[in-house]
View: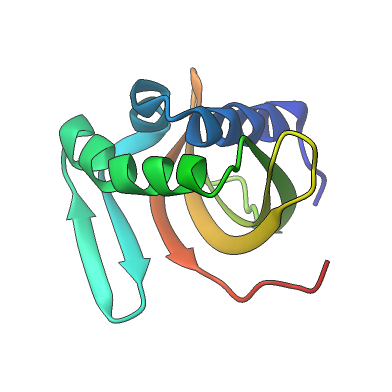
Length: 130
């Protein structure tokens, strides 16, 4: 299963928005409603305000740690052509000069529509060693 430029571009824009604290663009990346499954919690995200509220503290935390970049490493897990695709993404957060790094990994269920992709669900995943 190949990685399309549209899919790569979606995650690059999403990562740039995360790193820059651009909550409007982060909220644009979601379908509504969507689900966030993190550990024992399952969160129904019904509105753009839900997403912006959920990511506000994360964006502040990234900036406080000095992270200014979020680079995705993407692997299509399942794309059966039904309008949805499961994607595994390992994020490398780094400082401007690359001296600090942090890895996080998520699996995303994306809906594909005429305007591109939207996140319908996400869950944490184990990170691979860099």
